[in-house]
Length: 96
View 1 (cartoon, rainbow, N blue to C red):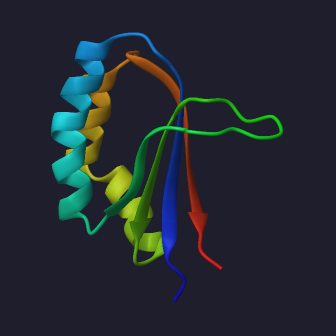
View 2: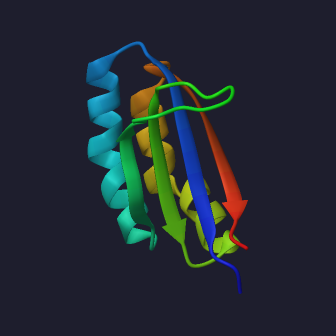
């Protein structure tokens, strides 16, 4: 079974307090669901059409596990705390 990855690109942070509240809830929710943070922080280089923006990559053992984490009540509570505090896109992709 292929692993799956959450890839988040933060286009803009509008409210640092909301982002901090999200992180306080989301981190434990993701870890409890079996996620493992592989990278998080500002991009150090960007090529082609890339942007120097905060990027987060989280690994899960399967696509089902990644989707279940996102849809879980614990992670949904984190999203509620985040509200409109950021503009980002979150993608779930399967590993090769």
